[in-house]
Amino acid sequence: MWFVSDNAAPAAPEVLASLTRANEGYTPAYGKDPLTERVTVRLREIFEAPDAAVHLVGTGTAGNVLALACLCPPWATIYCHRNAHIEEDECGAPEFYTGGSKLTLLEGDHARITPDALTRAISFTARAGVHNVQRGALSLTNSTELGAVYTPADIRALSDIAHDAGLPVHLDGARFANALVGLGCSPADLTWRAGVDVLTLGGTKNGLMGVEAVIFFDPAKSWEFELRRKRGGHLFSKHRYLAAQMDAWLEGGLWLDLASRANARAAELSAGIAALPGAKINHPTEANAVFASWPRAGHRALQEAGAQYYLWPGNQSLEGPDDEPLSARLVCSWSTRQGDVAAFLAVLSEQVEAQAQRA
Image (cartoon, rainbow, N blue to C red):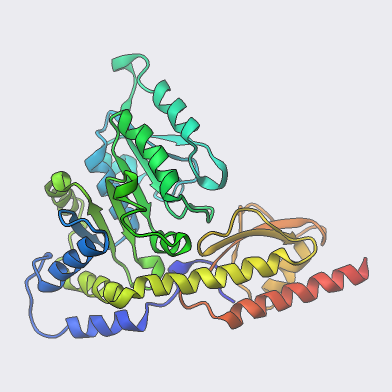
């Protein structure tokens, strides 16, 4: 019953097999190998973007911040949601790698930026000219940090506002595959056709050991990214091991299959929790994360039974009245089993029924 994070899941067997094959013999270093070229071709085909520039990095933070450094100068601001990963979980890396760009934090339910919030923020920026930070870039996250997704129409509405103001659009796709299969649209429809200029395509949360692809749909910034990646210490010499993971992940649509498994388990978990008295789903379950609340006694019983997940936010305590609700985040991965979900729901259901009898 492990629902802490999809980061903690094992790598898919197909990925490990690909790494073993890639380990044979010698091949050029620093991304000059045939596997990297094959991954580039495949991603161009998948995204229907024959001119796209593709660069592999080892972490999602590296992908996000190096891409944003190419889009936003130090004297400008990056517009993002208040709960965006680049704000809450990257330890100032965007500010560091951009040389000092500010983050302007926007509001919106379920960690989705609203068009009105973006319009107001842009109009407020640089109102005193040289005395203010300037308009820089827009960064979106799909799926969001609270488990919701942006549809192609949502992204188009925000991208149009950004582009009208001269801003490029970056998409943090740490869980892009989960959003994609949840929506049932094409990769192109959810990115460049909707106005996205740069995508950080995440694989680490979806069955890979550790690799993300940064895709520039307009390759004009490609060389700058390469220089920033090298200067920032993120160009792997044994690059084939990054490419081997991504190659297996893309083969036969494995990346979508893995994401579908995670989403299915999250849907089962969300439906089971929602059916229990005293429980509530706090944000839409549209990808592979469930945000819910239920009475404290249920949390105690689950943790005693070995369930692993985060209380969300983390400043809540298991000490206190049994019937007081606490909220939690539960993330399913490609390897989460139906039995894991069933066991979790059985413990929680038993506790809810016992509490109802005592009442």
